Length: 260
Image (cartoon, rainbow, N blue to C red; front, top):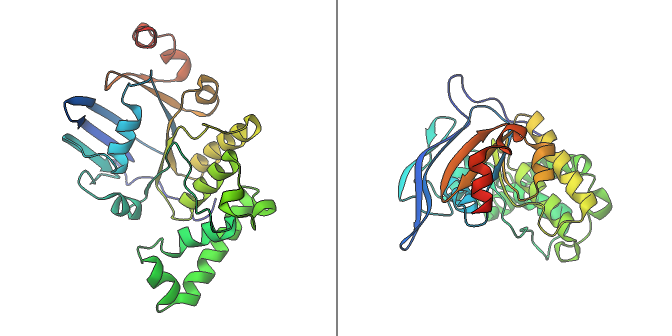
């Protein structure tokens, strides 16, 4: 894995939320969620539709305002940080619809993501002082990720030419260009062909083995079972269970939540 992350400082969790609440008008989508990722793991976030999973992910990523509660990354309070500042501290998020630049090739998509990963604007990174060094560094990182994700066969393909699964692989590789500590993946298998679902799952495991945490919202129980070290279950905006898949899935509270 290119430029692997390190373990959290001793005694500090990689991610911690304390009593996080998210409201949309009069609707409370997240009702006091507290979770902890003590070390880099692949953690699944599951629950029935409307449970608050994507809203919690958005609160952690900075896309949804937090009504109350706290979000900590490596012990640092990031509750009020904008998403781009969280990204600079190592927290990256993907969305249900994969985001790539349709007018750029796969290689260019990666280079652009990496050119400003130390906090510089794209204009500064590509046109300002040190342009050549930044370009060379980003190109080297992009080449390594093309190898790791087996994307060289489509390196010259434009974003608009990619399948759903290919777009998802490129999106995850784009996140890795920015040397994350933690990846938030929101239903990454949606619209993805079965053979690429398996590849994405393998990459999640490999990313974790390199010291990068992965928090994934996923509906496929087969995917969750195969890749997750641990599972969090949400219902009605709350975390109602937390543990290994086989133990959680037979919980009475979990069965009731899915049948409700």
